Image 1: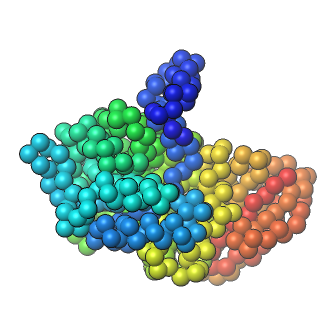
Image 2 (image 1 turned 120 degrees about the horizontal axis):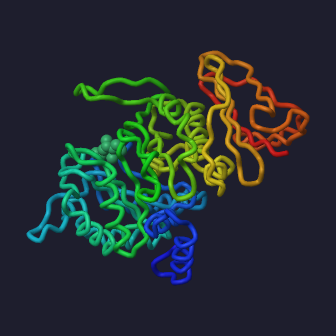
Image 3 (image 1 turned 30 degrees about the vertical axis):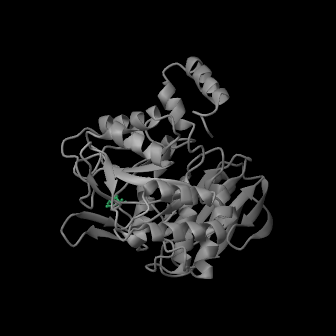
Length: 401
Ligand code: GLA
């Protein structure tokens, strides 16, 4: 949704601000972006600091033509390491060796593919990779991003020392809004100051945990002793209980996808993708989309699972039952249906049964059940549904009365 260039929508936002006491105009402007969880690609999980204009252009080419754009992937985001220095006027300068044509030309190229363009900075003095960050330059940087044609900013939390998170993220949020360009604001504060409690109206999405790693489960210290890397299932676990804070315009972000990066099996990646949809999470792919296998592409472009993620009700799912390694998660959808995940975290095949009461339907109800990975209607069932689930796998269902 556009607001700055569209007088009617701005008028609507102003009218809504008058009608909703306690809600600021800035909050409504911020929430009008990302009405469904943002979808796209980010360079970090696969490429870390090896970013260049050639990489970004070839990734944009692939997304535009390999079915991902058609499935809803939109934002192409350069993460850390594009920055080199500041000029005499304090303007941020990109690495001219890696980005010889400049950032504006790159943004134009991404836009020419019908995609949107995103960048990364940090609220401290330096980014996590030690590049110049935005503290003290927020308004100047926001203006530069707007001039370049940036549509999405991921904003990290390294080297912030004693800075207050709510102040730091509000400052950049206001700076972005003041440019008049709609720029989705992705807060990457790792959940340290519980942003779900205060960041609605400041950011469109906020990280809820430390960095994801390409492991099915587990957590531990990084080689330098710093805490902590987190596996996929452990991240999922940490989302349960904060679901009520998410909604259209403001999403919990359990971090970017690892699907296709090689550390998990395909069923584990299916589970990863299913959970991100269940959690109404941003779907930022993080693999080399130029050379993925057909199986990985099929996971990333499963339109039935993506439809759950993008459901316009924006209701994040939660766990409705846990019996050892066997879990059931559910989410309400705008058509009155439920998305359901039957998750076998264990190492041997097991039967999992969901009752309609567990997903807030009466048990006498007969409901249609569809398997979102098999793309198959399974029939109508009264009272519940039961099936065998392979180890480290999910069955993802849509249940519709
Ligand atoms: C932090 C973030 C990551 C990535 C790196 C870049 O660790 O959480 O997602 O942006 O910094 O240095």
